[in-house]
Length: 209
Image (cartoon, rainbow, N blue to C red):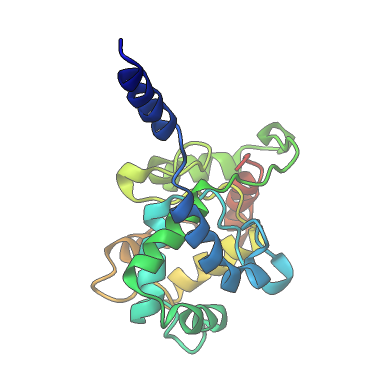
């Protein structure tokens, strides 16, 4: 093997192992406008009612950013936090939305320190979750890209409750073009009362993100 061939092979090996730094840096830069509410690493901020974003499916995040930008989500006057999101993403380009969503999907989810489902007394939350939610969102709320169902583990009880009520009240998912939103709105009718909802959400929040 000639020196030139050796050098070429070495260069190929080096380049193949290099991360896509430019894309990561752009995603990190774009995220700075979000960090004040969602946390410096996308871990969320309950005090500001901002959900965790780190580790969520990039395709789901991209779809939600598009919906905020188009007004499909966040236009209802009752959705105060959604309205704030619309303002934040209003002027971003489509490519920027994709880069931002991809960046967030690569961030590690914050650990909750080993919370376990065995801590529950009774199985109501587990049973209702598996019957109504698990088929799409995964048995441990890990999400399912094949069904375009986001990960729920790692989201706060407050955020989950608020979004459930948004669907139930038509604040979210009422537009005919929002297929997944309409599916979620229909599924809110599968839980009989607030106590059951509380138990289902307790099961979700006990899962590791």
